Image (cartoon, rainbow, N blue to C red; front, side, top):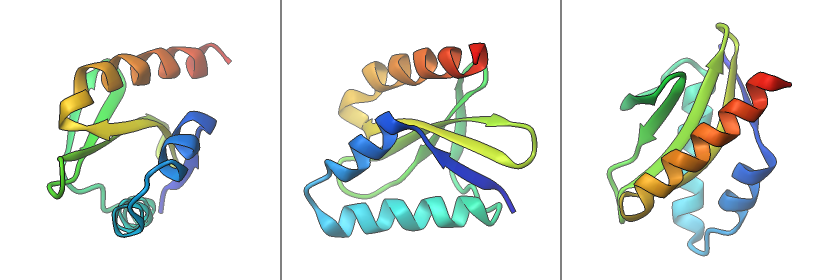
Length: 99
């Protein structure tokens, strides 16, 4: 099992989603991740990964893994905002590493 830790920025993004079914699907994906079922994941930068969801506009959630038991959710978005979201996730990961 993995411990999933949500950053304040990620919680704000998730809470801001207007579509309850979308929010439920993304939360379910986080639950699966906590069980070690990461699904479709790709490395987008040094230590920053992208979880891809293939519904709607192509949802993405970004995280950095610290050891075997911790996933820090750094942010999220859609395929349309992917480049900007990755840049934000990398910046968040750098701040967390410094702490």
